[in-house]
Image (cartoon, rainbow, N blue to C red; front, side, top):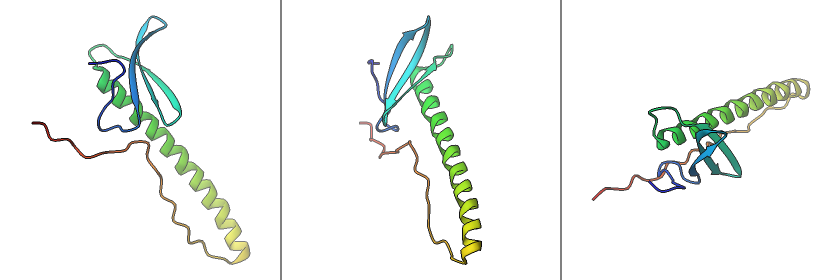
Length: 105
């Protein structure tokens, strides 16, 4: 394994195994952010990187859904007072981009 490394199913992310504060950590860089997570005993760097990005994706989805709920609730109050209808279709975007699977020869 090289350092930095990439995972084929997480496009746009670059990972690096670092020694920081006396602990081995996996550092992820992508989409303008930098994330770190400890490398647990018996865990491979690839699994730690996957766990880190998936946890961040879940956090961001939850924040997005909370924002949509708040926006919808305030928008519903506005629609009731004005009598207008809302036809916006908002779809959450994921940080995880799944590409085509390469065929091993």
